[in-house]
Structures are given as C-alpha cells and as structure tokens.
Image: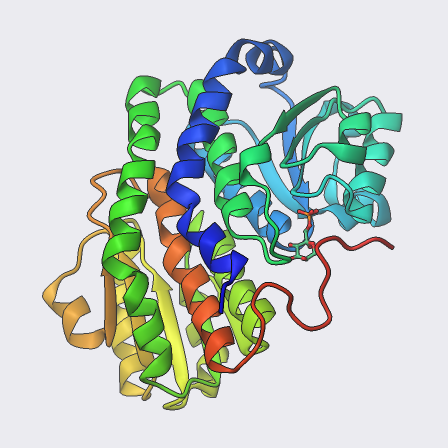
Length: 349
Ligand code: F1P
C-alpha cells in the first residue's frame, strides 16, 4: 500500500532542517514580538496532538527559559477560565494548531484576544488562527495529507524549542547547536530502527499499548498513545512513568506492550519500574539515550538514540519510532493509516 502517513513520518529529518532555516530567517521579528513578555505567564494551548505538544513545549519552556509556562487543552480557556488562569492581564498565549481552524483553538484565541492577551500562533497553515493572533509562525513544509499528525507534531515542537533556546539564560549557542544536530540524528535513527517497529508489531499479538514518560516526555508519551489509537484503533494509555504502579499496572498481561520513553533524569527509577513490569509479564520497548546491562536484560526491544544531547533537546528523536508502531499496527490490522475510522483532519464544532 502506498501510504502518505509513512512518507510523512520518514520525511521528518528533512522537514526539521527547513523548520530551523525558517526560524532563523524570522528570528528578529519573533524576538521583537516576544520582547517584554518574559514576565508574563505563557500558556500553550491546542487540541489532540497539538495539546500534547503544548504539554511538552511548556515543560521545555519552564526548564530552559525559567518562564512560568503551562500547557492546556484549548477548551479549558473559554469553558473554565478561572479554574486555569489567575490573571488574564498577566498572560501570553501560544495557540498551536496544524490546520489553524480547530474550533476550540479559535474560540480560545478569540476569548483571550477580547481580553487583550497577546497571541503568538504556531501552525502549518495559519488560516482562521492567523486572524486572531498578532504574530504567527507558519510551517507549510510540515503540513500533511494524512489525517494523522506526525511531522507537524515534531516540527511545530521543534520551532518552540528553538524559540525557547533563543531566550535561554544558559549557553544558548550550545542549545541551538544540539537542536541543529537533530535532523542528521533523526535520519540515522530512522534508518537504524524503522524495521524494528514493523518487527515488533508483526512478531507479536499486542492488544494493549502503554506509554510511559516523565517531565517533558509525558506529552510525548500521550502522543505515542494517540498514534496507535488513531491509526490502528487499539487500546492505548499514557502515564507519568512512576504513576503506572499506582493502579494501572493491574492491566498487564502477555499481550501488553509497555513503551518506556526513558530519560537520563529519571533513568534509575524507570529501570526499577522496567524490572517490575517485566516480572508481571509485559513485553517492553525501551527508547533511551544509552542502554545498560539492566536495560538490555529487561527490555524485549531497544532503541538507543546515542544523541549526546540533553534530555530536553532530544525530545523529537523519540517520535519516529512511536509513530511507526501506530503505522505498522494499522497495516497489520488491514486498516488505512491515512484515513482512520471516525476521524477528520480538523474538528469543527
Ligand atoms: C488537532 C487534531 C488532531 C487529531 C484529529 C483532529 O488539529 O485534534 O490532533 O489527530 O485529526 O485534529 P489541529 O488543531 O492541530 O489542526
């Protein structure tokens, strides 16, 4: 089958290069717009994949810039504003939407615009969102034919990581150098592991997929779970890694694949969890920077990124294998990953 989703997944490293170029070209305009907004609370909003992106983007932003940031589903802004925002006057909002037309994102943006909150939109298309935001970052190269978001997720996330790196009080040259190395590293990882994703699916009969990650990896875990759910109509869940012991582990059986988005920061704790879930009979896939004997002994499948970049700057390298797991599970089940059941590219209410 000639699938656009597979092509879009495999094209990510090239698109990341273009994102970096586009951001460089627009650096002055973006920085001018952000100027004076550092002291505000930054609210990243989106729906579906774009909401999970908002979670990881906010975690990165807090860590790298020390700016007070959160990620929220767009609907929370206009349905429960006071439950989420203390003082609208003190906010700066970054709505994220591939299409630029998702109803909740537009309603939230209108709500905030009416209250004089400045808006910097991140999108692949612009569209209605561009009418609400004073400044836009539009990544046309990352747009997709597939209903399912893959390269638009990693590319819009990368654009936010670059902006936050410009604002970092740490060595921002080093951060930007690390981010610049990702396209090349992505290519190596795809070449090395693209067949592994297919083998994992074809050599097993998984009925449940669990994704675990802490800190900035939690948003990625949610996104991995969404990919397998959307493309292959399979049961999937995501947790902060250590939350998995607190109840959810009861669902483990031999048809459960547990995917660890392992970080160097949480590694020690995550390895202990890995040992526990192995004892309970789960199959495991570990995506990590560098393995150890304990990881190899308890992992059924292993992706070693060997990126030599920090936990925070390595985020997008975890995605291609997660996306390919969803893709191959869809193909194996005889489904169409480009156009999954019940889904449309955009949700319009
Ligand atoms: C976001 C989104 C996707 C989801 C579905 C509907 O759209 O919720 O994450 O896969 O296809 O749209 P957008 O606001 O980023 O365009």
